[in-house]
Image (cartoon, rainbow, N blue to C red; front, side, top):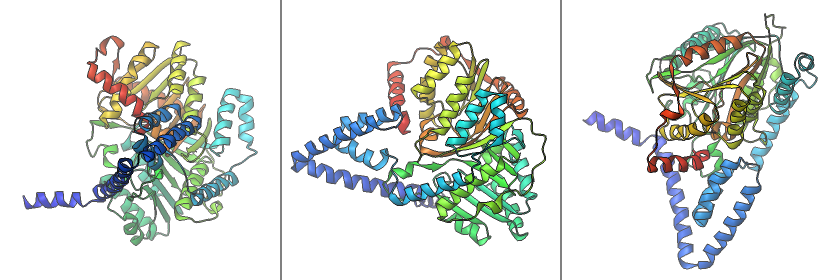
Length: 513
């Protein structure tokens, strides 16, 4: 009994409770002050109403997604004082002057290391103009280089990903860079950490970036200091502190591993035991990843180092981390890694998805853990199905977030009515984020089909054209379909008025989830 009480007291003392508690106290104080003003000064309410109206005008004319606008306009109009305060604190995506300067430096660094006279891009133009146009968009707006001399290996689940990542880390001679949204103490991470410690002793440089909110329940506070004692450099993205500011919404959702500048990994897999089946959460956890060997890894290296410089406020020469030799590989296609930032004006991740949807002629296969769609994506998917494209979407059978899954199901009717086929993974939770198109294109990465991934998080992915690994990805998709149940319109059943209303309300406020 005493042990049970101690465990719960320790949990209550954890910053996952303390930080939100301090934030709630700040919000309560602000609301009390606002209420007091409202109680004694009617003019205060009128002023707030005027400012709320002006804020709505600002939101309507902003470049934000229409769904995100509506989700904020409703509370602002219904509750002029409190809605205005909440939007001012959390609704925008504003950067301070100092942060803007830091982001500008990142842009210059990425632009500096981008090949603006990419011969491979010119070659692709003569091979396939549609593919060239997609690659050019990614190159211009994600500041990334299209590559050929790159071997791609599809990793169909967490166990395979872990084995391959561990194998390559053990082979490292110069440096190891890891950037993950979640790192969790357990078999997967502890095994990797033991190897990293050994590699440091061998003179290998090791750097780790992790998102503080993503690791809030999985790593001790100030874990970077613990790593520093092992001579492992660590950077914590956007520390979870009790500050009322919209930047709290922006997280580093990327998953990147780079070894010696010529081996790279990304995909949906974090460094946690549920991804390799050592910890059972929401049934079987299905995910995937991809390993790159060759020239395209340089793009991942630049992504990592720009994020490192942003957090640490350093300015270093990236060239010393470029692989010095031409990589000999049996590459049979085109590869371009890409990143997406919430602090830019371009929704790169969403536009890559929209471009792939528009290019589909025969089939479009999608896996996603969350299906929270804006109007542009719904229209694109429905139009693809209407023109005869075989559109299939796999979603989780056992969700990790029940409210978000309710929103996912709220889109089923409209998608099914337009000829899109939906499948739920019966064995558990599917965390993979994959698009496959016509045996020609594919993308694997960290970008979910929800507002947070598309507009609020730092994300990354790999765009593939005419690579043999695309067939491997398709084969795995076909195998996964056999472990799914198809959702039929006639079997959806009628919702009670309460559940129907709940889903409609959740759809409106889905951008804020």
